[in-house]
Image (cartoon, rainbow, N blue to C red; front, side, top):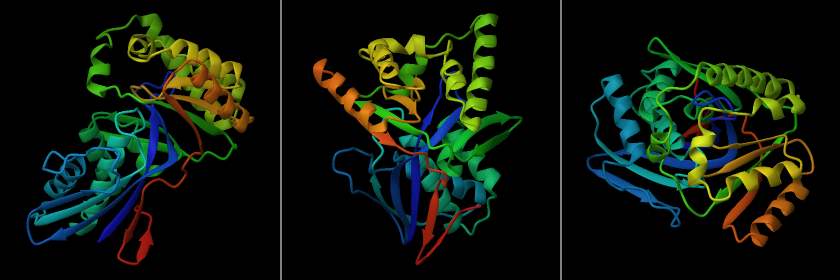
Length: 305
């Protein structure tokens, strides 16, 4: 039996559409083993639904690695216990993909390199900004270029935390992507390139004033706000309570704020705001996960490299 713990992730950070992401200390715990034949999938979190047939994303990730490694599959048993809310913009699919691929690589004899695994994960997910931090941890810049996926991870040591505001409804990523324009103006492209660069520098240096400017975006949030009830007023309230940067996490509907102090006051203030305005949202204060995915085979734990 192979156990894998994979963190939640928040991507599309501000102007860093499909590029910037961070790992958070909320986890999907997956156990996988070979069996003589068949497919058995068990879901330990009764509040969420996952497919228990060949459509299961963990199983699909396993098969992708087996195919790349030239490994003849047998039966598979999957046990999942995830804290990550599904289809909320917190990388639930990336956690499944990374977890399945890491376990499959061990089962197939560790034939794939680290770079090969991350590229397969990005291919299955469709973009690299969630799978990068899910695997590496920390704050990641991820790029796909000439058939390779490049991820650069920086560990978060500045003491910042992340207020994650999650509604009681979901937004399908495919539907949210359909509202995005096929082309953008040159000025909007330059705006996002400059702001994404500033956001990255501010996250690494801990410059919260620069972070507040760097988070601004013209590529996706304006188009997606129609799917997020009260998004503009929520953004406004977070800044009134001391947020350094607030953005739509992934394709939404989760909204995330970057904080460097007043964590308890922010949490209490947002919970009062949601209660007073009858928004069915929850607020959680999370920290960065600087480790990334962790694998335990039998009784020995090891970081996959």
